[in-house]
Image 1 (cartoon, rainbow, N blue to C red):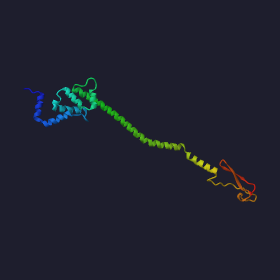
Image 2: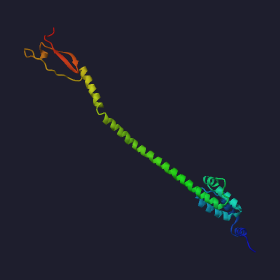
Image 3: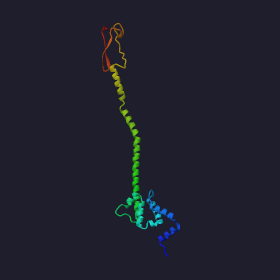
Image 4: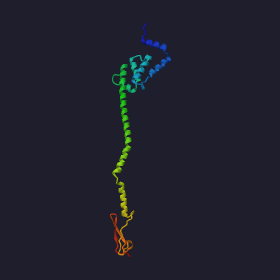
Length: 207
């Protein structure tokens, strides 16, 4: 008497598998998720468990339904998009592989953009101190007389007030040959002109 494949599997499992092992495999198949696996890795694991637990996927439609639940959400959305969702396992797997490819391409492009922006920020941070130093150096080079100009103003102010400097002016001698400060011709400072004092020699000694 010929035996069908389902009967053979059932008899084989009865002979070589105990109920505890079968229950573990059924739970694993029912809770199978793609996670970090690729589509092909997840499909391979799915097919292995489906052969061990055929009662959980009795039809092609049920197999597709369980496979869609196994895929990651981003992949499952693209596989089921459109007006005609997959009804065959082969079509479901093909769509999942294409969806995974474009999702990975998008992630890679985003990673490249993020890396470029990060490197740009690093370069900007490194060049800012150099630009500040160059700006300060240019400012000092373009205004070399700023400090000396202020010093000149201070000196000029001191000259007008007659402070900070000692002036030695030639003293006029009188007929007796004496110096002006000891003679009858004292020196009188009348006013200042352009920072220099204007002096006048008195003709007679004041009373």
